[in-house]
Length: 253
Image (cartoon, rainbow, N blue to C red; front, top):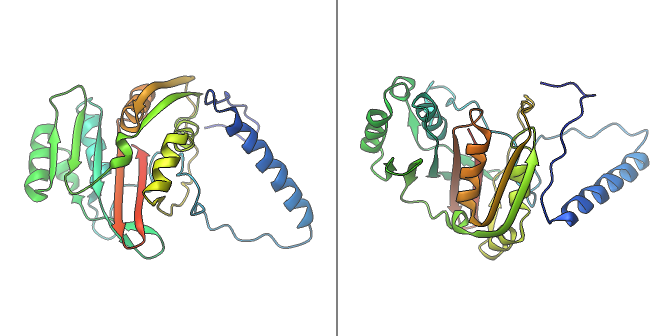
């Protein structure tokens, strides 16, 4: 954890230099607005992301514990199971849309079940939620809700390169800035769900390189998890669909 005066290793996406130019313009604009607003009381920050903006760079949107029950949400449980087994993987899940452009949890796992050996835990999860399947036959463990569409994960990104030391503060936003991802989301009416920032600051690590050429979004997320081990052990994609379109959340655990 660093203090406000600590310098951080620069993160860059290549060759999207216009990404940084846009950041510079945004900083200058913010300075003008701040100067114009001197003497006014500061507006209360809602802590949420603008509707058209990219998703957060934090590891997850909550503690992973369902309020009032003590159970774990599925994504947090899967990450805990994988970490205990020293494996990496992913969870694709369909949730429910609720008011305020948010998602409601629909799959829960007891803490006791999450502490069981991986194969036993995933078998019990599949028995309780028949639409959820898991596969550990490959290099990574995949836990998939068969009712999810998750087309965004199949989008191929022509070139992706990020170097950073506070994962995933640069890598996730850089992925959402790629033209291939932005084009797919506009075409299919996909938005990021509303999100609140965590209180904790991302831990500093040695510089990590996340790179992919003609790789799918899922493959790039896999490389993020591998590159950030042992900080993270899984990535989670969650979606919900309504008459207003599709909302998604993507995070590392």
